[in-house]
Length: 193
Image 1 (cartoon, helix red, strand yellow):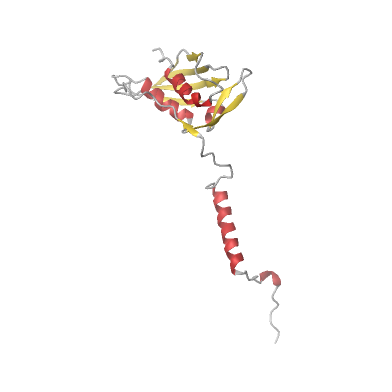
Image 2: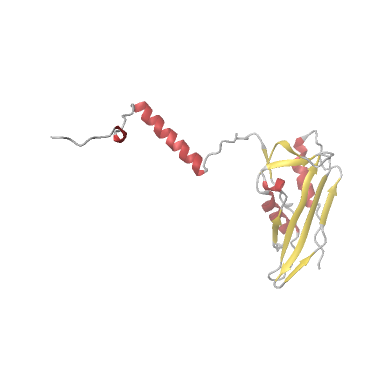
């Protein structure tokens, strides 16, 4: 009798035991890479993490709702930057943001703007961060555009600006975290509309 023809494409090629383990490992690694569980970027474990925090003393009884609605691109990255005299951004070697800078600003400003009285019901402060940066001349600058938002109302407030002339020493990057913290703490409270 005639047997049905078997094509060679449907035949399984036997794997040697060592090759089977290698194939399984390759499949597993590819799956992790595609799922985003593994990064091919080099680990920077030696980098110090920079976290913006409000001062721990004199914390208010009530916090003020603050929401950062826009930030420059350099604050959306983990890299900590300084700007040169032409405005070009340069990474500060050895430092990464420990947290999303916008989240840190929200938490910190919420506490810094708090008081012993609760804020009006449904009112929040929305901030556009226009600049929050150390400069390579040793200074630091922050410019935030606040808007008080309450039910049925949205009121722009005067810009919150701070400039610290001798905030850090560019030749000593270890002074950068304290400079960013000082810049945060130097921001004035927004004026009432």
